[in-house]
Length: 319
Image 1 (tube, helix red, strand yellow):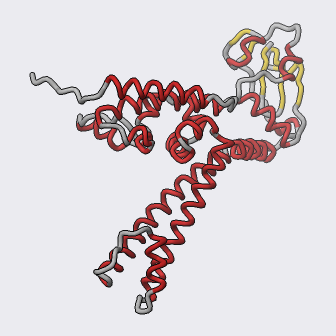
Image 2 (tube, one colour; image 1 turned 135 degrees about the horizontal axis):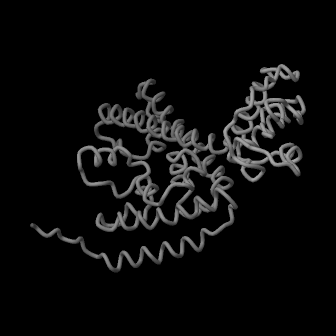
Image 3 (cartoon, rainbow, N blue to C red; image 1 turned 60 degrees about the vertical axis):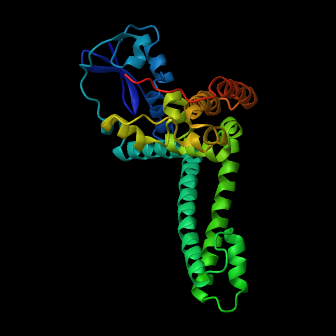
């Protein structure tokens, strides 16, 4: 006998004929639940019940423990013959997709917030530079390089300041405030999605790593060597294509421990960071048990060792 599972039921087939069957309840949630378990490689209760005490041939790797794996030679079983419609299957697959989207919604929203914060930063810098240039040309005796908040207050107090310049300065100030609000939202979201990562390297840098990887689960599966150069894809492709020196760091360069270090120490420090980030991401993707203190202690100890043993840049010997 052969065991055959369809989206609407489980069947036992002998010499091309159905000898026993268990049909699934014709409800969207019930169909979706069973399809999801099959997709995950699980064995359905109906399959175990139908096979109990019998020797059967199976056609799927996930069912190997229920019988002998062999080629499927059974005739097609049509859902319409048992009162099931393709519309029910369509609704069940849509339900599965919606559930998957709900599970990834936290990652999805975080990634969008990171990209929105980057867009706001770019716009803020662009508008601020325009305000400073306009202000410096109109009032050459005054300092245009002050903080945008102070510059805006100065502009608003000047009677002969053009209305358009005031409007632009207000826009720059508003963009700056919106970016800060977005970063506060990212910080709050990181506490629930990746607490260890946020406490180890900071919520903003951690969020950028998650966004670059495509989610906390994807980040947790990346090797430390890949995490080290996340964000430096252009340099990496150039290295592969043109043979330029490979990048030593990507997003991790934004951390003070890396960008404040001498150039000849940055690669080693970034490598240490990447190793600890990999561990933190794996824990955050599963148990979310707080281990950031141990990781930070090991990281700081290793950085001190790098600073002590690599005080000078090694000179390349000429051949």
